[in-house]
Length: 311
Ligand code: PAZ
Image 1 (tube, rainbow, N blue to C red):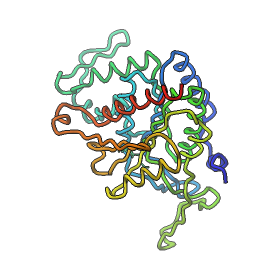
Image 2: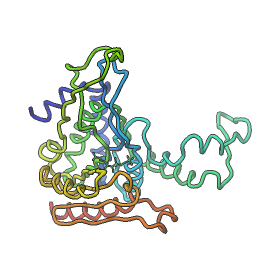
Image 3: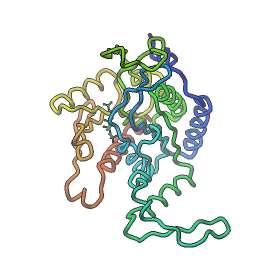
Image 4: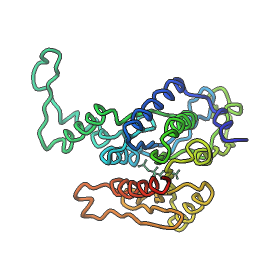
């Protein structure tokens, strides 16, 4: 079955058509300004096991890679369409979970004319003011847009809509597919309607393979774009071969290979004819540098070269 027909098999999320329009307008506006636009996908997908779902198959992804990369792309001048798993890391906010600001911020007096006054010790929330400023600058410039998904079905439909939105930008569009998307799902037609009963004994579930959306993305949805997929493994001895295999099959430009435990300090940028290891030293960690800054810096240069080649 063709991949697009497979997407149509998954239930479309509420508001999908409206999101498609909003994303198309976002991309067209930034494209008209001559800005490059990147779609950053982030976080894991949730796969329901029942039609009225109580239980789900989920994965480890925190969304930190996507959120931190979105910040770096904004700093590099890209427009960022951030397609992220609801309640996973969010750009500029993820370093400040509620337990940090709940104890650091306190009301600093009665509200005047509807304005709330809060104060904090300067060193209680390091980086907070800079993060607020950066977010608000991006919001004011209209260079950042966030779209949420939860389930695998939401993700597949929104990815397709985002690809249609970015396709008119040609080679100036980048796809940075850092989300950890489930490889398996239970088709709606094969799900039990009600909660699976534990009184039924051992649970055996047969799941189908999720169609690989990289294939229609590269071939049909955005064939001129600069496309980066990610490959995560737990076995270091296979990760580069798996990345090479993906490049061979899908014929896109880059795979970022990483290992579960070391993903925040080491990645390998794999292309058809190169392998570049990016490492974060202890000293850089101490300075607050994050691996995503290096990844984005590297990919931005490759994107520039790609645009020049296409023209
Ligand atoms: O979301 P996170 O920061 O916890 O982890 C990032 C990551 C490992 C999900 C990402 O770098 C990645 O490899 N994504 C693709 C995973 C895969 O499907 O192979």
